[in-house]
Length: 129
Image (tube, rainbow, N blue to C red; front, side, top):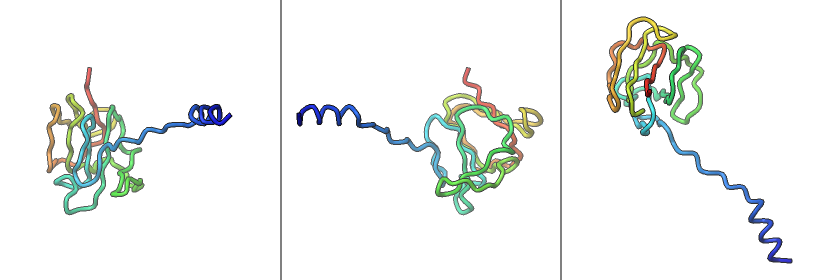
């Protein structure tokens, strides 16, 4: 009976994998992610607002920055990107306006910019095709 109880207990055990970290504050950006930062130099010396992406986002105005503790700041991301790291593994285009319109800058895989002079990023196009 003890053997059957052990087998039943083992079968009923739910294994939950640990969540892997994606982007993190203070400029660390995991591979396979496009990381945007509100402050220049990947937030070093400023408020630590950041967000990472793995797919297109046509309108950043409905996204909020994450803070140092991974909580939402309730602060819109539109027109607030001051640095970025493209570790997604393919090209990325940062657009001035929502829905991939206006002026834009295109970056190759693994390209980063610690001082993105034009903060006006309102949509993100990741083109892994």
